[in-house]
Image: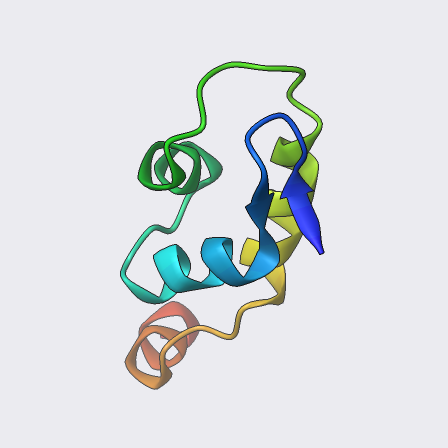
Length: 64
């Protein structure tokens, strides 16, 4: 499914960049080469970031 229609970026591409370390919408957009457009992708990217489970070490640190 497309996350960004303006730049033809799919969920799979976004997930690849998230797995490589992009952890904000701004970082994901930069990694995917998305230039400013309509901006509707930002909400979907943010939702995908929230859906992604944290690394086990991060969850422990956040709970402490």
